Amino acid sequence: MKLLDVHPRLPVSDLNRTADFYCEHFGFDCSFLPEEPPTFVILEKNDVNIQFYAADAESGEATGNATLSFKTDDATAVHRELEKKMTIEWGPEVYWYGRREFAVRDPDGTLLIFTEPTDDPPTCLDE
Image (cartoon, rainbow, N blue to C red):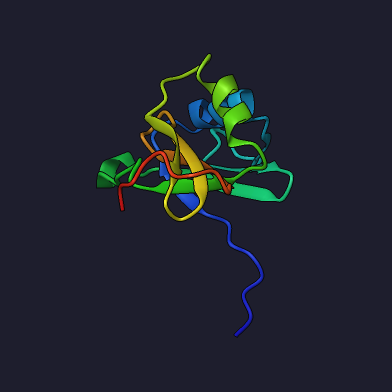
């Protein structure tokens, strides 16, 4: 079996709010399915593709129970930009496995980790 790519598809409570968040803060391009009201959106930036759909409120479908990890070439620069706009959950820290990482949350509570490889010594020894 050969896998070529993965495109997470996550439920959200407010599709427009989620699309606005990712487009405004991270520069994603947005493609809604042509429905009124929209129930599905694909967000794309470079080679990253994330899909969101409107959670079924009647069934009590949970939202915000995911973690997305974004590889970046400069986590420190991304951190500097985002700390002006939103709450940083943790980091940036350098971990024992050779990565500098920090995290924020989207409006539904999904944890977004930004990560880059580094040879810097660890600043966090949590395993």
